[in-house]
Image (cartoon, rainbow, N blue to C red; front, side, top):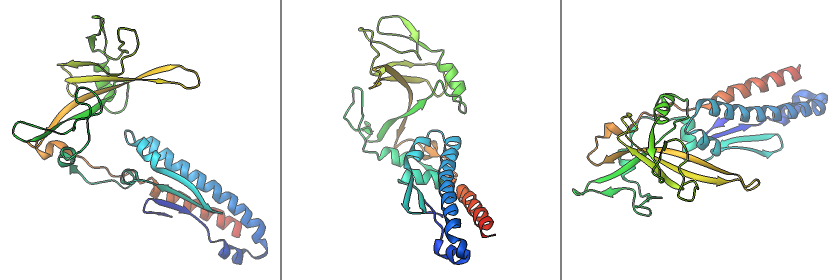
Length: 262
């Protein structure tokens, strides 16, 4: 059953054959079919729990979720990767300060592209600008309220005309700008005082249709001088979808076995 990021669905068919006697061949065929259905339902149940309970970490969890037939009548549902397993099991509160300032990542875009993300200040202190994604069109939590305010923002585009911050920004050739498209300072909105919009255009290989998506980021500076308490991760109780699904699987298998043994 569920253990160490792995969920095994298996039945001891040799023991069943002894108990069933002459009825073994036909009955076991029914059990095999039923167990396969339970395995499929167990996987679907874990996916459903993840989709309903997780938000920003949902895709990370689902990418790590695997379903495999190891051998005939044995099915394994597993979680690959440290992060998907930590989402399943949960974690205690901790300060993110040292982890962030110890990062060796480089800047991916902009004037500092290719340079270390963590910089050194005049006094030798480490500092970095931590991005936070804002979702103007999300209705989750308080994002809906913040989004409503962001949708009211306007700024001047490259043509010198005022336009809504949430609309697509275009260059002098009337094509969507790629990368940093616009930014606004002093919005007067808490958590979005300095907000930057990034755009990326995707092309559908089959239809050739272009779609431009937008990401809205605000930044908060962290340094060696920042108090650890200001960068506390609240922790996470854990999804525990495997434990919840294990109870369902045990109940279903017992129902099937008890009905067929009679």
